[in-house]
Image (cartoon, rainbow, N blue to C red; front, side):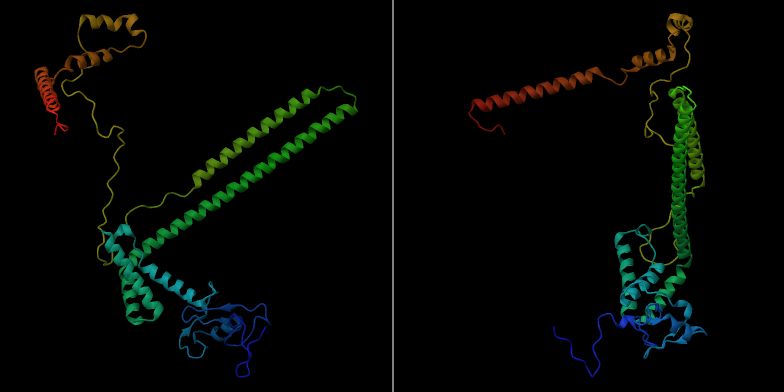
Amino acid sequence: MSKAAPRNGVPPRRPGEDDEICRVCKSSRYLNHDLHFLVNPECYHKMCDSCVDRIFSTGPAPCPIAGCTRTLRKQRFRTQTFEDLKVEREVDVRRKVAQVFNKEESDFETLRAYNNYLEEMEDVTFNLLQGIDVAATERKLASYAAQSAPLIAQRDAKAAKERNNQNAQQAAQKEQALLNRSAADRASMTSIAEREESHNQSLDALAADHRTDTKVVLKKSTARRTAAEKARDRQQQQQQQQQQSQQPGGLDTAADAEVYRIEGLRAVVEAPPEEPYDPFGGSSFAPSYYTLQPHYDHPWLDKARTDPSIVAGGYDLREYYQRTTLEAFAGLGCFLEEEMGERERGKEDGDGMVATEGAAMAAGGDDVL
């Protein structure tokens, strides 16, 4: 296999070799395996941690890379996350823009207004990444950030609360898993100890030539094991109740107040208080023709109220009131003459249609219509 010829007397570098050499002190990771590289989001020039400590420990200083005029600070240096520095820079720019353009689709009246908002956010991101009108874009982004400062703070607090709740929930789950594991270990150790104790008792009984009934020993061991299991179950129930009482509360769902000017935003309206649940959806079953009374005076009803053969089985006379009044008023609104007239007219129309079809068939017509 042919090798690449040296250029100007310098052998070509291997792929990725530039990432292993500090551009300031020329230290190589090949010779120093503990070499650690850092980048600064101001210019994204990579240098080793020794150069960072040596140059920037006394305060801000210009970037030592030739051609770079940015002023860097030591506290802003961090470890590189992505292998490609272009990807690293793009992720940082998008995170910075997303902190300002943080509205959701529910904040806009129409989908077109939300799409225009997303397009504006992408234009700002593209200009910052490609270096197009950087000064004007930065001023626009700063203006938006100043106008939406309360909303940004409110949503950052909400996101922080969500993260805290999630972390607390994960910690509670880990703690519960540890408690369950320790309880299982204790139960296993208790069971082993009980088996060993039963075995030793059996051996002692045989050695002393006592004819101890093995069933009695087993019954005693089973009783002790049952008591231990009950105590362990009570302890687990108490731990679960304590864990449920310590879980964090729900998240706030109040609508965020709109503070900065973007076209097409929907007005924030507070949700009305929830009404009591109605399984019938507001439908009323109260009778419209009469009002049912709780008591009716009648000799037969007075006798039925005290008749053991009627009330002994739990029968309530109010059911009789409801049924009889419903039967009495069930015919109101029904007019038999009108219904009979409509039925007769429908019958006559049907007879005429049948006669027309018969005449057409007799004349040899294929289609009645």
